Image (spheres, rainbow, N blue to C red):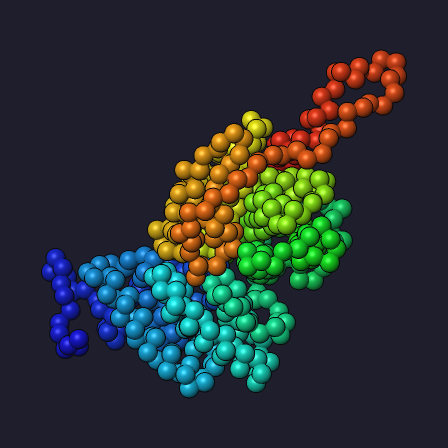
Length: 508
């Protein structure tokens, strides 16, 4: 390109190019707004939004160019209204040439690793999966080199470490991040709920449960993502033929369930749904405190999507049941169905509240979770229980609407959305649901490098929500007691009761 060529003009006003030595005066403000709304913790906590505006001008030019390139992909700036894609591409090229050369030379400085994170995110956004795989791999190796030579744990270093680890877990087929345990980045303060006195009095007896570090929302959000990646790889191993008896204490399923319980135990009650007043917020307040609400909603969705998918009926009712005639305990099956229904319903509820409160989901890792969770209401639409079927239809539509929005930016999510739409043609015959297993494997495994096979093979699955008999007898009659036939005992045991009532009485 001829760098001496004059910038193109529109309506008599000059238009900036990526090679301008002095960027537009308001460009950094624009970058901060876009970063806060569309990049911060979606999925990476790479920069602290509270300090980014002040530090951005001091970044080396290749890192600053990477930040500008990524934000221009997500929101156009008036100065680049002519050929905005070209401006973003030029910033990316300028940044990538320098950063990748430094990486090849073994330069593991913070700025190079931060730049590689941004370049990888842009490549994922472009659908350039092979390039992203390579870029993430370079960042992982540089991070390993840095950990061998330095024990620095300032907030910027921690943010970069966890960003690399998140990319490696979610978007590569061979996670190889360093296993050296590091602290989590700093977290923003929790906003006071609208009815602070009621919220405080409700759980005042739990104050003794708060321990140092438990109120860090960034830590909880990152933990939720790490646990999700473990479940996704558990399913990938199962798809490759490594099956187990999940009800045994020695199983990976049992260990993952224990990890979920530990995650719940570590979560401070300050961040519980009932105590933050999320549903009572107004959109303007949510936008003002996105530094808290974005990681909070990611943590909440992850905390429900992960156990929902872990207990997916596709695995429990089809994969394991059809594997060499494996006999499964009926009480275990009942537990998995109840958990899948309960947690998938919460994902649907949270997504609808985000839509009502104008807090859009923009995170591709959440897109993976939502796509995998959507397979649960997809299957339970065919339940013979009318209440379960109706709720499943609503939750599936909610998930599809959210994925459709994400698909506009993230090709890896667009593929999963398309796969779910194709599954809609599934038909039920004689109480049996006919489907292509490879499509469901693709949705639940979470690995963006694979696509569902074009195999025409089909399988049958019978969708049921009851595996054990409800208690039918009653206690001995006493005077003035209701007669046994006045009780509807089934209501206390069927899954629809759990979903409908736990949503009111139990909060995440």
